[in-house]
Image 1 (cartoon, helix red, strand yellow):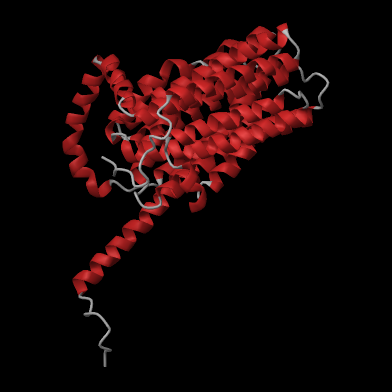
Image 2 (image 1 turned 90 degrees about the vertical axis):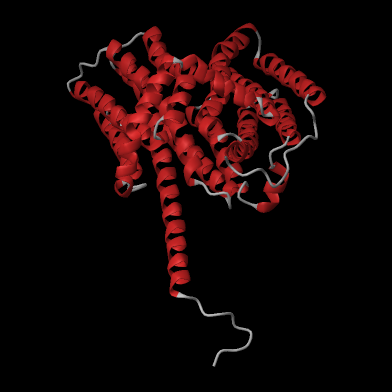
Length: 440
């Protein structure tokens, strides 16, 4: 006999509906985990190649200029392709784009592997493959943003974003040391392992969704999609301008671009200054200092899952200003010019930067038009990447004309001026409400 407090019995239709809802949530979680696994695996592959290709050039007897050209080929595609890649990620299926890029990266690595086995790697071929890797990496990174926007639900959004951020920092932390370790075993071994990473990334992607049930609808829409692609190809400039316009519509995003670009320029310049003066520093200690940013980023992304932390890092101009002042404090530490202080500064900035990345990405997913999301992110990443590229010659020049203390002091003064200016100009406490608008 049912108690009076018990509710009405559940009908078969309600039970079936509840079962379908449960299955959909489980599938969504599984798809998200596979996407994060693909992104982390691909990121590890990219960062190992960033070490393997220059080391391979050195092993093949390349001159310092040629080694620099290989490194340049890995980084310059970010300046050239971020904006067009944003258009591509918004217009096409991001999962298909990611599968294509992983397939092409695997072929590119395999082409170098075949030549490395017989020790006939030509520098021009290495430069070409490095440029292709950089371009495909840019396309992949924007496509994964578009894919995650479809897999992350409104509830627990910040935790899901923090989880994906953790995967990226894990890749940063392990990728470069792994690249050096693999290359020590031999170039063919390192390249084969890298090709396997891209294959694994593609396998994770291929398991994300089964579109066979929607084939008829996809086939009927395919012709319209192709027309849209042809139209966007003819008006690529107009499409990229749409991303700039959409970003400019959001006060928080404009402030975020300024804050992240300034802080990225500052910390990367300081890292170059440290490297330029590290002749007497043991290599293992240099590695620890450079790993500080990855360790701090992993700590910050995990802290972002805590509700008490989310309360203070929710998207707001005040949070961006706090990030800039944390950078001022960290860069002040580097003026002591000891390796341990450089390592502490990278740890602090990595943690603070990761927390702010989670906040910015959460804002993007909740407030930016999903149809324009990749283009908006491409504008933001282009600015940040340009700052990283500028940091290399700037840091080298500062290290050449002055001591480590004076060089880091100049960067500290620059960041301090930027923080004071931002505090005066930005609408300081015009934050974003805690309950943000739902995705469109």
